[in-house]
Image (cartoon, rainbow, N blue to C red):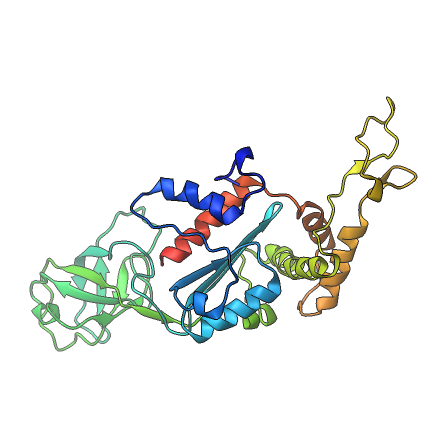
Length: 321
């Protein structure tokens, strides 16, 4: 907890956090709500963010928000793993997909053909593309082929790093020199699935195929952890080597009486139960990485500030959208 100290022990976390949050920016009104998350309360927001919430509550709140067009975010961390889900509704408009300035490059040549080919200027060692297939562009300052100046945005087909195909230019005047080609950014509409559907039909994207089993396993592990907590009323115990009989030869701290066994042991039963719950989900298209799930379960009771900072920052960025 970044906002709390020892003096806050025994206090309601929302009330204690509210005081610290309010001091960060006096221009932002921060209020604490300690009652239930009723539909009337949730309906007053544009964005709802849940954290440390049981799956049943996530599904209930997620269904409510999706039906009413309220943006819904779930952010959580368990040990070294983090979880972030966003549902911005069925018609969420993104004004700037790339979040950057429009591309503007100088024209070197435009062919008089069908389709016309535009050659752009750029550094010889450039390995990236200025544009992408389907981008819309406009022209200005073109001499000779002046018909292009001031036209409505034209879709392009990328041939290579410096050449674009545009529409028919065979009837235009020959290109002489000059001109700029400017990317025109168009709003894009995206449709988001509710949490309930996303859990049943997950779309997992990874940077390489080798990472896919691990990502699928973590997806199943989070759901299995919810089931474990629902059954046991707690998170899995950490997997640590302990002894009920401390001695110079075994200087480990003893366990609480309710945990003690007659010999040294590793607390693996909880992790194995989480693994069995993950297997029972049966929705994964491939085999689970059992070691990943065991490690996840064994560390899930830990709260690590660096992990919380990363996931919290990502959630805040999504909320700002």
